[in-house]
Length: 406
Image (cartoon, rainbow, N blue to C red):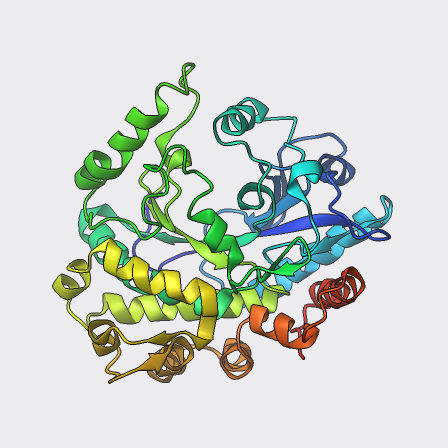
Protein backbone atom coordinates (compact mmCIF):
# COMPACT_ATOMS: atom_id res chain seq x y z
CA UNK A 1 0.00 0.00 0.00
CA UNK A 2 1.31 3.48 -0.81
CA UNK A 3 0.97 6.43 1.56
CA UNK A 4 1.14 10.17 1.03
CA UNK A 5 3.48 12.67 2.70
CA UNK A 6 3.37 12.53 6.51
CA UNK A 7 0.41 10.12 6.57
CA UNK A 8 2.33 7.42 8.45
CA UNK A 9 5.80 6.87 9.88
CA UNK A 10 8.25 4.09 10.60
CA UNK A 11 10.62 4.40 13.56
CA UNK A 12 13.60 2.10 14.23
CA UNK A 13 15.70 2.15 17.42
CA UNK A 14 18.99 0.26 17.92
CA UNK A 15 20.47 -0.79 21.27
CA UNK A 16 23.55 -2.69 22.32
CA UNK A 17 23.52 -5.60 24.74
CA UNK A 18 26.05 -5.46 27.56
CA UNK A 19 27.10 -7.79 30.33
CA UNK A 20 25.71 -6.22 33.51
CA UNK A 21 28.69 -7.15 35.68
CA UNK A 22 31.75 -6.24 33.55
CA UNK A 23 29.94 -3.72 31.29
CA UNK A 24 31.35 -5.22 28.07
CA UNK A 25 29.25 -5.66 24.94
CA UNK A 26 27.59 -9.07 24.88
CA UNK A 27 26.97 -10.73 21.48
CA UNK A 28 23.84 -12.69 22.50
CA UNK A 29 21.02 -11.12 20.49
CA UNK A 30 20.33 -14.63 19.14
CA UNK A 31 19.72 -15.85 22.73
CA UNK A 32 17.42 -12.89 23.42
CA UNK A 33 15.32 -13.52 20.28
CA UNK A 34 15.20 -17.25 20.99
CA UNK A 35 14.15 -16.63 24.60
CA UNK A 36 11.30 -14.42 23.39
CA UNK A 37 10.18 -16.53 20.44
CA UNK A 38 10.92 -20.11 21.48
CA UNK A 39 13.10 -20.56 18.38
CA UNK A 40 15.54 -18.32 16.54
CA UNK A 41 14.15 -16.04 13.83
CA UNK A 42 15.69 -12.76 12.71
CA UNK A 43 12.41 -10.89 13.33
CA UNK A 44 10.02 -11.30 16.24
CA UNK A 45 6.64 -9.57 16.15
CA UNK A 46 5.57 -8.29 19.55
CA UNK A 47 2.26 -6.61 18.83
CA UNK A 48 2.84 -3.13 17.43
CA UNK A 49 6.63 -3.40 17.85
CA UNK A 50 9.00 -5.80 16.10
CA UNK A 51 12.38 -6.99 17.36
CA UNK A 52 15.19 -7.90 14.98
CA UNK A 53 18.91 -8.53 14.68
CA UNK A 54 21.55 -6.30 13.11
CA UNK A 55 24.92 -6.78 11.39
CA UNK A 56 26.73 -7.34 14.69
CA UNK A 57 25.66 -9.87 17.30
CA UNK A 58 25.47 -7.43 20.23
CA UNK A 59 22.97 -4.99 18.64
CA UNK A 60 19.19 -5.43 18.62
CA UNK A 61 16.66 -3.28 16.78
CA UNK A 62 13.14 -2.36 17.86
CA UNK A 63 10.88 -0.95 15.17
CA UNK A 64 7.27 -0.13 14.50
CA UNK A 65 5.59 -3.24 13.14
CA UNK A 66 4.64 -1.61 9.84
CA UNK A 67 3.80 2.06 9.24
CA UNK A 68 1.93 3.91 11.99
CA UNK A 69 0.17 7.27 12.24
CA UNK A 70 0.30 7.20 16.05
CA UNK A 71 3.39 8.99 17.38
CA UNK A 72 1.72 9.81 20.71
CA UNK A 73 1.89 6.33 22.17
CA UNK A 74 5.18 5.21 20.65
CA UNK A 75 7.46 6.33 23.51
CA UNK A 76 5.45 4.16 25.94
CA UNK A 77 5.25 1.25 23.50
CA UNK A 78 9.01 1.25 22.96
CA UNK A 79 9.59 1.66 26.72
CA UNK A 80 7.42 -1.40 27.46
CA UNK A 81 9.39 -3.47 24.93
CA UNK A 82 12.69 -2.29 26.42
CA UNK A 83 11.52 -3.33 29.89
CA UNK A 84 10.49 -6.73 28.53
CA UNK A 85 13.88 -7.17 26.84
CA UNK A 86 15.72 -6.24 30.02
CA UNK A 87 13.66 -8.80 31.97
CA UNK A 88 14.54 -11.54 29.47
CA UNK A 89 18.21 -10.49 29.50
CA UNK A 90 18.45 -10.82 33.29
CA UNK A 91 18.66 -14.58 32.77
CA UNK A 92 21.92 -13.98 30.85
CA UNK A 93 23.30 -11.39 33.27
CA UNK A 94 22.82 -8.75 30.60
CA UNK A 95 20.93 -5.55 29.81
CA UNK A 96 20.34 -2.95 27.09
CA UNK A 97 22.56 0.13 26.95
CA UNK A 98 21.51 3.35 25.20
CA UNK A 99 23.49 6.06 23.32
CA UNK A 100 25.12 5.71 19.93
CA UNK A 101 28.47 4.45 21.22
CA UNK A 102 29.82 2.27 24.02
CA UNK A 103 32.53 4.39 25.70
CA UNK A 104 34.96 1.51 26.35
CA UNK A 105 34.36 -0.97 23.53
CA UNK A 106 37.37 -2.13 21.47
CA UNK A 107 35.79 -3.29 18.19
CA UNK A 108 39.04 -4.86 16.94
CA UNK A 109 38.72 -7.60 19.55
CA UNK A 110 35.07 -7.49 20.67
CA UNK A 111 33.08 -7.35 17.41
CA UNK A 112 31.23 -10.49 16.35
CA UNK A 113 29.13 -10.65 13.19
CA UNK A 114 25.58 -12.02 13.24
CA UNK A 115 25.96 -15.68 12.27
CA UNK A 116 22.39 -16.63 11.35
CA UNK A 117 19.91 -15.35 8.68
CA UNK A 118 21.51 -12.90 6.23
CA UNK A 119 24.93 -14.00 7.49
CA UNK A 120 26.09 -14.42 3.87
CA UNK A 121 25.38 -10.72 3.21
CA UNK A 122 27.10 -9.64 6.43
CA UNK A 123 30.13 -11.83 5.70
CA UNK A 124 30.45 -10.21 2.27
CA UNK A 125 30.25 -6.75 3.86
CA UNK A 126 32.96 -7.79 6.30
CA UNK A 127 35.16 -9.06 3.48
CA UNK A 128 34.87 -5.77 1.56
CA UNK A 129 34.94 -3.26 4.40
CA UNK A 130 36.36 -5.06 7.46
CA UNK A 131 33.58 -4.35 9.96
CA UNK A 132 35.80 -4.35 13.04
CA UNK A 133 35.87 -0.56 13.29
CA UNK A 134 33.66 1.72 15.39
CA UNK A 135 31.84 2.75 12.21
CA UNK A 136 30.30 -0.71 11.93
CA UNK A 137 30.00 -2.10 15.42
CA UNK A 138 29.63 0.86 17.80
CA UNK A 139 27.10 3.13 16.08
CA UNK A 140 23.53 2.77 17.36
CA UNK A 141 20.98 5.05 15.73
CA UNK A 142 17.33 5.91 15.24
CA UNK A 143 15.95 5.77 11.69
CA UNK A 144 12.83 7.67 10.65
CA UNK A 145 10.95 6.43 7.57
CA UNK A 146 8.75 8.99 5.82
CA UNK A 147 6.37 8.04 2.98
CA UNK A 148 5.98 9.57 -0.45
CA UNK A 149 3.69 8.70 -3.36
CA UNK A 150 5.15 9.37 -6.81
CA UNK A 151 7.82 11.74 -8.08
CA UNK A 152 6.08 15.01 -7.14
CA UNK A 153 5.94 14.02 -3.46
CA UNK A 154 9.45 12.55 -3.54
CA UNK A 155 10.79 15.82 -4.95
CA UNK A 156 9.30 17.88 -2.10
CA UNK A 157 10.31 15.44 0.63
CA UNK A 158 13.85 14.82 -0.62
CA UNK A 159 14.47 18.56 -1.05
CA UNK A 160 13.30 19.28 2.51
CA UNK A 161 15.23 16.38 4.06
CA UNK A 162 18.48 17.50 2.38
CA UNK A 163 18.09 21.00 3.85
CA UNK A 164 17.47 19.70 7.39
CA UNK A 165 20.09 16.91 7.54
CA UNK A 166 23.10 19.14 8.37
CA UNK A 167 21.64 20.40 11.66
CA UNK A 168 20.00 17.18 12.93
CA UNK A 169 23.14 16.08 14.87
CA UNK A 170 22.75 19.34 16.82
CA UNK A 171 19.69 17.76 18.42
CA UNK A 172 20.70 14.13 18.47
CA UNK A 173 24.48 13.78 19.05
CA UNK A 174 25.09 11.11 21.70
CA UNK A 175 28.46 9.57 20.76
CA UNK A 176 31.32 11.67 22.16
CA UNK A 177 33.54 8.87 23.48
CA UNK A 178 35.38 5.95 21.88
CA UNK A 179 37.76 3.65 23.77
CA UNK A 180 37.77 5.78 26.91
CA UNK A 181 38.65 9.07 25.23
CA UNK A 182 36.74 12.13 24.07
CA UNK A 183 36.93 11.86 20.28
CA UNK A 184 36.80 15.61 19.69
CA UNK A 185 33.39 15.07 18.08
CA UNK A 186 30.07 15.22 19.87
CA UNK A 187 28.74 13.01 17.09
CA UNK A 188 31.63 10.60 16.57
CA UNK A 189 29.17 8.09 15.08
CA UNK A 190 28.65 10.37 12.09
CA UNK A 191 32.37 11.14 11.90
CA UNK A 192 33.17 7.43 11.36
CA UNK A 193 30.01 6.97 9.24
CA UNK A 194 31.51 9.35 6.66
CA UNK A 195 34.44 7.02 5.96
CA UNK A 196 33.51 3.50 7.05
CA UNK A 197 32.82 2.58 3.40
CA UNK A 198 35.79 4.42 1.92
CA UNK A 199 36.65 1.35 -0.18
CA UNK A 200 33.53 2.10 -2.27
CA UNK A 201 32.87 5.85 -1.87
CA UNK A 202 29.85 5.70 -4.18
CA UNK A 203 27.86 4.12 -1.34
CA UNK A 204 27.95 6.99 1.15
CA UNK A 205 28.70 9.88 -1.19
CA UNK A 206 28.91 13.11 0.78
CA UNK A 207 26.38 11.80 3.37
CA UNK A 208 24.05 14.60 2.20
CA UNK A 209 22.36 13.13 -0.91
CA UNK A 210 22.91 14.63 -4.35
CA UNK A 211 20.43 17.03 -6.00
CA UNK A 212 18.18 14.29 -7.38
CA UNK A 213 14.42 14.70 -7.27
CA UNK A 214 12.89 11.88 -9.33
CA UNK A 215 13.12 8.09 -9.35
CA UNK A 216 14.79 8.08 -12.79
CA UNK A 217 17.39 10.66 -11.76
CA UNK A 218 18.05 8.83 -8.49
CA UNK A 219 18.63 5.56 -10.35
CA UNK A 220 21.02 7.17 -12.82
CA UNK A 221 23.05 9.26 -10.39
CA UNK A 222 23.03 7.17 -7.22
CA UNK A 223 21.99 3.55 -7.78
CA UNK A 224 23.84 2.91 -11.06
CA UNK A 225 27.25 4.11 -9.79
CA UNK A 226 26.75 1.99 -6.63
CA UNK A 227 25.87 -1.12 -8.65
CA UNK A 228 28.83 -0.59 -10.96
CA UNK A 229 31.27 -0.09 -8.06
CA UNK A 230 30.06 -3.13 -6.08
CA UNK A 231 29.99 -5.56 -9.04
CA UNK A 232 33.63 -6.73 -8.83
CA UNK A 233 33.12 -7.52 -5.11
CA UNK A 234 29.60 -8.99 -5.26
CA UNK A 235 30.19 -11.80 -7.74
CA UNK A 236 27.09 -13.72 -6.56
CA UNK A 237 24.76 -10.70 -6.94
CA UNK A 238 23.42 -10.96 -3.40
CA UNK A 239 23.47 -7.24 -2.50
CA UNK A 240 20.60 -4.88 -3.34
CA UNK A 241 21.27 -1.21 -4.17
CA UNK A 242 18.63 -0.07 -1.64
CA UNK A 243 20.60 -1.96 1.00
CA UNK A 244 23.94 -0.57 -0.22
CA UNK A 245 22.99 3.10 -0.39
CA UNK A 246 24.42 4.56 2.82
CA UNK A 247 23.77 8.27 2.54
CA UNK A 248 22.45 10.14 5.57
CA UNK A 249 18.99 9.85 4.02
CA UNK A 250 18.18 7.14 1.51
CA UNK A 251 15.31 6.75 -0.93
CA UNK A 252 13.52 3.42 -0.61
CA UNK A 253 11.56 3.31 -3.86
CA UNK A 254 10.81 -0.34 -3.09
CA UNK A 255 8.57 0.83 -0.26
CA UNK A 256 7.87 4.47 -1.14
CA UNK A 257 9.81 6.02 1.72
CA UNK A 258 12.79 8.20 2.55
CA UNK A 259 14.77 6.89 5.51
CA UNK A 260 16.73 9.38 7.64
CA UNK A 261 19.84 7.85 9.20
CA UNK A 262 21.87 10.67 10.78
CA UNK A 263 20.16 10.47 14.19
CA UNK A 264 22.09 9.05 17.16
CA UNK A 265 20.01 6.94 19.55
CA UNK A 266 19.21 8.76 22.82
CA UNK A 267 19.02 7.70 26.47
CA UNK A 268 15.32 6.76 26.35
CA UNK A 269 12.41 6.44 23.87
CA UNK A 270 10.83 9.62 25.25
CA UNK A 271 13.88 11.54 23.96
CA UNK A 272 14.02 9.64 20.65
CA UNK A 273 10.37 10.32 19.84
CA UNK A 274 10.68 13.98 20.85
CA UNK A 275 13.44 14.32 18.26
CA UNK A 276 11.45 12.33 15.66
CA UNK A 277 8.34 14.49 16.13
CA UNK A 278 10.41 17.69 16.00
CA UNK A 279 12.16 16.61 12.77
CA UNK A 280 8.83 15.62 11.18
CA UNK A 281 7.26 19.00 12.02
CA UNK A 282 10.34 20.85 10.70
CA UNK A 283 10.08 18.88 7.45
CA UNK A 284 6.37 19.66 7.13
CA UNK A 285 7.28 23.35 7.48
CA UNK A 286 9.90 23.11 4.72
CA UNK A 287 7.59 21.10 2.43
CA UNK A 288 4.88 23.77 2.88
CA UNK A 289 7.32 26.30 1.30
CA UNK A 290 6.37 28.83 3.98
CA UNK A 291 10.05 29.43 4.73
CA UNK A 292 11.62 28.96 1.33
CA UNK A 293 10.46 27.84 -2.12
CA UNK A 294 10.91 24.31 -3.39
CA UNK A 295 13.19 25.61 -6.16
CA UNK A 296 15.44 27.31 -3.58
CA UNK A 297 15.58 24.11 -1.52
CA UNK A 298 16.53 22.09 -4.59
CA UNK A 299 19.27 24.56 -5.53
CA UNK A 300 21.52 23.59 -2.61
CA UNK A 301 24.56 21.55 -3.68
CA UNK A 302 25.47 18.68 -1.36
CA UNK A 303 28.98 20.12 -0.82
CA UNK A 304 27.59 23.31 0.71
CA UNK A 305 25.23 21.37 2.97
CA UNK A 306 28.01 18.92 3.86
CA UNK A 307 30.30 21.72 5.09
CA UNK A 308 27.59 22.74 7.60
CA UNK A 309 26.98 19.10 8.59
CA UNK A 310 30.74 18.57 9.06
CA UNK A 311 30.92 21.42 11.56
CA UNK A 312 27.78 20.29 13.41
CA UNK A 313 29.00 16.74 14.07
CA UNK A 314 31.93 18.30 15.93
CA UNK A 315 30.18 20.81 18.20
CA UNK A 316 26.49 19.76 17.95
CA UNK A 317 24.09 22.43 19.21
CA UNK A 318 26.93 24.86 20.04
CA UNK A 319 28.07 25.09 16.40
CA UNK A 320 28.01 28.65 15.11
CA UNK A 321 26.59 28.80 11.58
CA UNK A 322 27.79 31.74 9.50
CA UNK A 323 26.46 30.61 6.08
CA UNK A 324 24.15 33.56 5.47
CA UNK A 325 22.16 31.76 2.80
CA UNK A 326 21.39 28.91 5.20
CA UNK A 327 20.42 31.31 7.99
CA UNK A 328 18.14 33.15 5.55
CA UNK A 329 15.99 30.01 5.25
CA UNK A 330 15.02 30.44 8.91
CA UNK A 331 14.92 34.22 8.76
CA UNK A 332 18.00 34.54 10.98
CA UNK A 333 20.71 37.14 10.41
CA UNK A 334 24.47 37.28 10.93
CA UNK A 335 25.57 34.28 13.04
CA UNK A 336 23.40 31.80 14.88
CA UNK A 337 24.16 28.61 16.75
CA UNK A 338 22.48 25.39 15.74
CA UNK A 339 20.60 25.54 19.05
CA UNK A 340 19.21 28.96 18.03
CA UNK A 341 18.16 27.61 14.63
CA UNK A 342 16.25 24.77 16.31
CA UNK A 343 14.70 27.21 18.79
CA UNK A 344 13.51 29.31 15.85
CA UNK A 345 12.04 26.24 14.12
CA UNK A 346 10.35 25.25 17.38
CA UNK A 347 8.70 28.68 17.70
CA UNK A 348 7.18 28.10 14.24
CA UNK A 349 5.94 24.53 14.76
CA UNK A 350 5.17 24.11 18.46
CA UNK A 351 1.45 24.76 18.00
CA UNK A 352 1.30 21.54 15.94
CA UNK A 353 2.94 19.41 18.64
CA UNK A 354 1.14 17.78 21.56
CA UNK A 355 1.99 18.87 25.09
CA UNK A 356 3.48 15.45 25.82
CA UNK A 357 6.16 15.89 23.12
CA UNK A 358 6.50 19.66 23.67
CA UNK A 359 7.73 19.17 27.24
CA UNK A 360 10.40 16.75 26.00
CA UNK A 361 11.51 18.91 23.06
CA UNK A 362 11.81 21.89 25.41
CA UNK A 363 14.03 19.83 27.72
CA UNK A 364 16.37 19.13 24.78
CA UNK A 365 16.41 22.76 23.66
CA UNK A 366 17.19 23.95 27.19
CA UNK A 367 19.68 21.26 28.25
CA UNK A 368 21.48 20.50 25.00
CA UNK A 369 22.35 17.30 23.20
CA UNK A 370 22.95 14.10 25.13
CA UNK A 371 26.66 14.32 24.17
CA UNK A 372 26.93 17.74 25.81
CA UNK A 373 25.20 16.44 28.93
CA UNK A 374 27.46 13.36 29.09
CA UNK A 375 30.63 15.46 28.70
CA UNK A 376 29.44 17.97 31.29
CA UNK A 377 28.70 15.15 33.72
CA UNK A 378 32.16 13.62 33.23
CA UNK A 379 34.08 16.88 33.54
CA UNK A 380 37.70 15.94 32.85
CA UNK A 381 37.39 12.45 34.32
CA UNK A 382 37.52 9.81 31.57
CA UNK A 383 38.70 6.95 33.77
CA UNK A 384 37.03 3.58 33.06
CA UNK A 385 35.43 3.74 36.53
CA UNK A 386 33.83 7.15 35.92
CA UNK A 387 32.75 6.25 32.38
CA UNK A 388 31.18 3.02 33.63
CA UNK A 389 29.36 4.84 36.44
CA UNK A 390 28.00 7.50 34.05
CA UNK A 391 26.87 4.98 31.46
CA UNK A 392 25.26 2.82 34.14
CA UNK A 393 23.14 5.89 34.93
CA UNK A 394 22.28 6.07 31.21
CA UNK A 395 21.26 2.40 31.31
CA UNK A 396 18.95 3.27 34.21
CA UNK A 397 17.48 6.16 32.16
CA UNK A 398 16.69 3.66 29.39
CA UNK A 399 15.12 1.16 31.79
CA UNK A 400 12.93 3.89 33.34
CA UNK A 401 12.31 5.96 30.17
CA UNK A 402 13.73 9.10 31.78
CA UNK A 403 16.05 11.88 30.59
CA UNK A 404 19.70 11.99 31.60
CA UNK A 405 20.27 15.14 33.66
CA UNK A 406 23.59 16.58 34.77
